[in-house]
Image 1 (cartoon, one colour):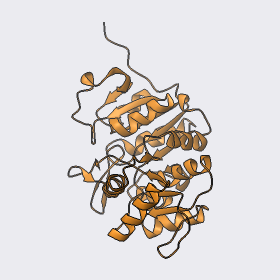
Image 2 (cartoon, helix red, strand yellow):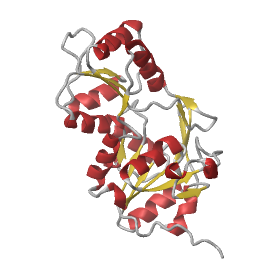
Image 3 (cartoon, one colour):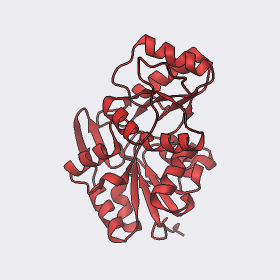
Length: 273
């Protein structure tokens, strides 16, 4: 007797990863994956909300949305979440502190406009948190300042701590993870993740979609990021094999960490919505 297919027609909202799930990135080139546009259009037609959550943090969320529209995906500026969003959720829960950031200029501008209190290179405010996103370049003086701040009590926050994410030509190494590892090693402190997977990210998703995580499906290519994010919030989880976790034997994964559904790519979701 055949097992009944896992359907998503009772899910009230959706969260999609971007790289390896909806698109593949090769340098400056971004290519949509088969079925990505059709799946988003089908969800929109069903009147259910969706958001995209990428751990990419080298540019503001709206810039990711514009990039996706340019390759044919119908995504609005306000439908993209990144660690630049969820770090605000974390900071709101832990008090207003001065933040020493490792970010690009555009990401810094976004955080400043959002009201995050950032510390500049020449400023001497007491640092309450170090936040590592995706810096363009790093010097040893900045790393030492960050490590000393963490040693004296500042929180070490990072958007992501996995070594790489899916690219069209293989894994793309994470600069944020490299910088975070350097500060963590020098300070002897473990970083707190505020992107995927984290409680801050779950709350950011719930707030954005206006519903509890248990009523949401989280869809992505990374077992350690996307599926783990879904498990944190009690969401339904879907692993697509078009990215970083494509070769994983799910049957060998501990049951509590397995996705509810595994498909080759997002196109396979069309008859399940």
